[in-house]
Length: 349
Image (cartoon, rainbow, N blue to C red; front, side, top):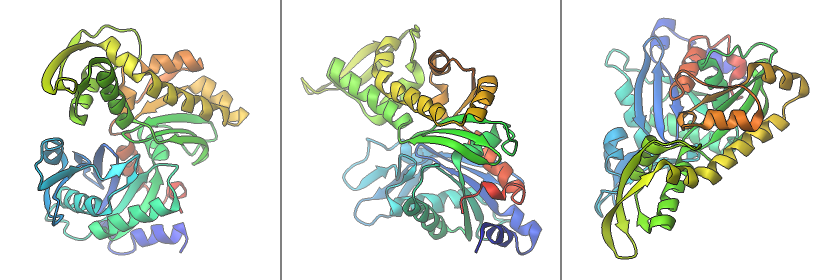
């Protein structure tokens, strides 16, 4: 069946009922967001699930499960079932999605929903199959897929159907997507599996090397949020507590934004190189459009202090941070969902 047939099947019965039970999902490494047609964003939760080790029985999902990371005993494990934007633990992903779909739906709309899922542009056929299988087993009736950069572009108001070239850099929890968009398609792209997770890991590694301090991923994320910067900026000091692995005792160190900047040099350098590579792949006619229009940053990584100015310095191009970098992808997917016939060419066939 072609994509047009799938789209027709998406709404082939009672239009009003089906529209109300259709969802767009940004299934991210760090967070999952759900947009319900006619209702807007109805769920925003960390992509974390806690399960019993022996039985795989569900203990908690979302924010509650995230609070358990690094704190569970032998009988329970808190899992992040997605890595680098793709599913790595099918059982945990299905359990998490089933609960999220249940949380997002109301009693009025009890039918199994039809879903539009945002996926990385570099996703493989095997990974596509894994996403569809997980969604269907979690309770979806039908599944359509759209590349994240296209959804993000629509979410920030870029006219993707036009002939002019627009560049979007989407820095998520597990991937960085660099895409040049024109005529409802991705004309050039570069997808690397580096994002917020690698930033957290870089902070952890730096503190281990510099201070012999072991910290967990939740603490690393807190440091990133409070002190994360890529330029010479003074954001004061921050107390970090962890385990001194030399002496084997808990300890607290005071770090500065300079520590975090040094920790992030390599990861940020890789992201900058990915943007450069995406620009090198851009057709000349579209490149001239980007000189005028600049680059739009989306995703949680866009909030890293100084990243926009660093990219401006490295590329010589105007850089703009999306107004809602954390939600623009699911909002764009929601717009596609609301206008599915108009945007059917954006879907992955």
